[in-house]
Image 1 (cartoon, rainbow, N blue to C red):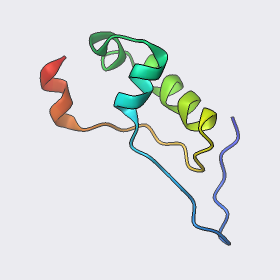
Image 2: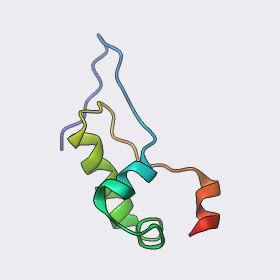
Image 3: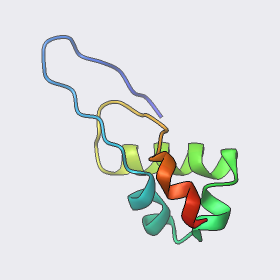
Image 4: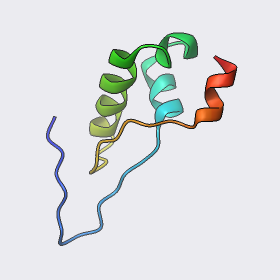
Length: 66
């Protein structure tokens, strides 16, 4: 994976944890409790969809449903 920020354009980023979980077909209780899965999965989906800046984050309130 190669992410970089180009200072000459507007770079995109996305909070996509729920989307990544669904795209990967991983159940929520496994996705949100495994650092390896949420990190590699989020970055894989970021790269797949051409998003410029790879991030790993999620809404804290989603943990209540896990």
